[in-house]
Image (cartoon, rainbow, N blue to C red; front, side, top):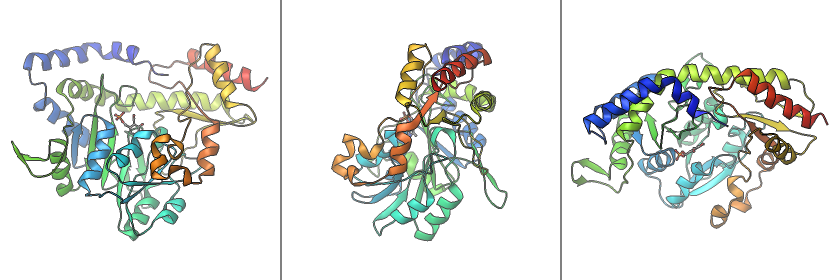
Length: 371
Ligand SMILES: Cc1ncc(COP(=O)(O)O)c(C=O)c1O
């Protein structure tokens, strides 16, 4: 599904030198390299503060801690997302409230969101799934009306631009009170290990987020609140800082590959190609089709038999996971989510994909669907 090896070969010289630089400095945790990367990422994402941390799941958990959410508080999230979005809420004994996604964008449906708000609701976590932004203008307006916090799960959409009705353009992750991202190796900005970051424009929140990620520490060995230990190490920061310079080129390559797939699948009666809302740029962390009139699972198997990787993101929505039985997950009725879960399939998309590979992948998809 990804080719991080070829991508590394192209930037090997720069990356190797940066990693050796960290090894020679022996500054493995914190320090200039981490701070420089945070500053560069803040500039790239047009946000005031970036707090690096150990991974995207921690970023979400630390964000909910910083907002002071208490056990039993309701947090509204889509069920059609990676488990980490909701797991972080469950760790803190918050009550996940699952809402539907829009059938086209796969992201939180603002109408469903507003209907799900109760006096216990404290926060909303929209997810920019597969690299496509949720409808943030509507979501932020709803949050404002109901005085709720919003945390963007931007793990899959770093680099995506969102245009508001008045023409203002912002990067996803910098729109809400807090944004979270992941540097898992297959992500659009992927480390060579784990990593994550938290974004905010709020100075007070930034201080709190920083403290929580560092054992609740205000100054060395003075711990003002319960926190955790969540650090991005200097080796990963050095690698990410180099990859950040290439991120827009990487996004271009993904968009080009998506366009090539789109053309091949256009107007096919059994295929719906990824939607692009007029408000955003899709950064194609995944290229995900909806398959109708044929068995998605049989297509998945056929591709595997023919040496073509494909993935089902995600075969079981969060509200149906055993993990959430104790949170009343099965009581949620989400027909759009269930419908999508049975029909989506993601094809390989990454920066190194060439047209020859894509032509082969496309031929196998069409061979099966045209049978
Ligand atoms: C939507 C979403 N949220 C959160 C995460 C968690 O990130 P991490 O794996 O770095 O903990 C991921 C990625 O894995 C993700 O795709």
